[in-house]
Image (cartoon, rainbow, N blue to C red):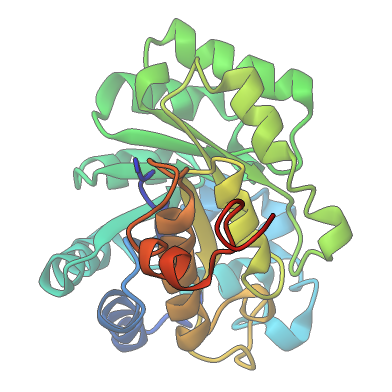
Length: 295
């Protein structure tokens, strides 16, 4: 019975650390030692580059979730600098889990690529930043993971064609994604995983699924549609202030996700012989055979 590998699970810490390195360390340790996830992921922004002056100085659209008087101040409060990301990488190594971060702009891509992580992620919001993609293709050797939320099929084609022209399609991973926090089940559109696999599976390294829904059933289904990466937001407490917490898994939810994905991956096989070893004593005891028990 050949068994397919379980998908790798990426626990998206993002900014759920509330700008606190001690909380970030606890989240890394929890994801690694309690939940047994494969990777954690953070976010990196140069906010003055990413945001227009008007966006930076505007109030947060949801003041109850804001950590500053303006949206820019809110984002700066949650930001870790490159030295802090280097420390996050050390903690990941200490606890035995992979490190990654999303990069939202060219400066952040340069800063994080200089740290040499195994992968960097491009969020759905920035996947048309071709200058940033070109930089990563040229000056970064790791995998480039790209989410495709709020991205038209034509834009998806452009992204894949760019990665092919840059000759980095063999280290490109695409993620089916619906951008919302949280996403109702009817808008998860899980069959996008299968569509991406059919359209691009032979053209890129891998296909994944990035979910913002509630619960973990959808993620298991994504795996059966051959998503080899599953990314979920992760928090220590879903009631904490912040946009992403309501769409995040708490520690036990993340643990159950990892457990269930690995269990179902183990179960996704064909029988390698007509009667399995576990069935033989049951067959001898219970099976009603024609010519023996039946006419």
